[in-house]
Length: 398
Ligand code: PMP
Ligand code: GLU
Picture 1 (spheres, rainbow, N blue to C red):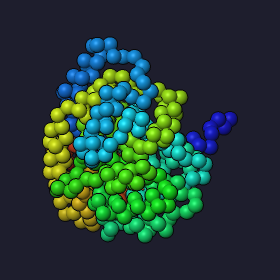
Picture 2: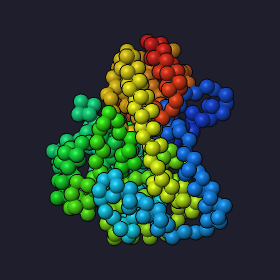
Picture 3: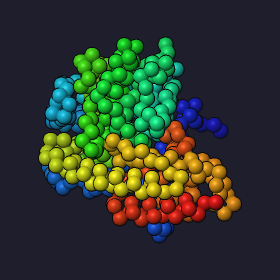
Picture 4: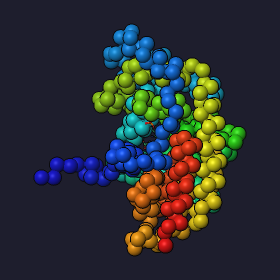
């Protein structure tokens, strides 16, 4: 019996989560795996955040909350937007969800009709195309190259807008490349998109993780006109090392936020009550944790980029943000491991996991088969060992 809906057949499991699960399964068998797969900070959630959640539990804050999040958290989100980017929102323009991923899912369900096209600069995070397809819409990938710093050009964007185009996703800094747009570059993309009547979906989850003095600019701060056509998605997972807490949020036009809240009210209801209290502390408490984490990531990025570029046949550009590097490894394709030819990024990632016990994610999952993605959200010691292993494994290929 074929029980499955067409929509379920269209999508695959998240490759980033699948690689992490595979690496963890090997670790559970006692294999010493170095994990560059997971896109999550290796730092512990700061104590004051944990304490705020404990306090909420102790005080019995364990019941349903308003579907779209508690007012205090919405106010803290509004205040962060004001302080960080100078943008003003009111409570009706904010939705708190079970992670930024959930906000994005609600958003696609709220704004996409069957057959609508969504422009997605690629390489892109694995979940955008599949979430768009879950909403019966069509992902349209706009490729970019290393030569262009993995940034798309406005003229290419304009050439891809059709009568069916509904939205443009911007993810700066990007997962998987770490590349980020300057203010002028962002404006050059956002203006024609808004002129064409598109909704801009700006995933700013890595906005606080930028290096070497790069200035992150929120799409919402470009102009009032652009802000009114944009939904900004963010969350506490990456900036405060709270991936498991599942708190993310969206800010945008009140009618879109209201529709997203309705969808949430008929699916998950509110995000976890005491996790909201933790997120409230994260966003409104001292922010020095973020700076310390950023410094450490910056140090690791410099090291990992240096090591990768020193490996034969590997080139890796230095990203402006996030905690990923996206080296080009294509010169190794066609070589063999004990007679077995490696034909693309999936083969190479499997080889590295099975033979070198290093987990990386194949670039093909993000829309580029020439690359692999490594997350450097792991300790310097692990990075050093992982780099030694990759270097040795690549040298073994014949
Ligand atoms: N957007 C991007 C680009 C991401 O890499 C992630 C990481 N999972 C998310 C959104 C979702 O984050 P979360 O659901 O943990 O808030
Ligand atoms: N965003 C992270 C990653 O790309 C976490 C896993 C996921 O949700 O995709 O690895």
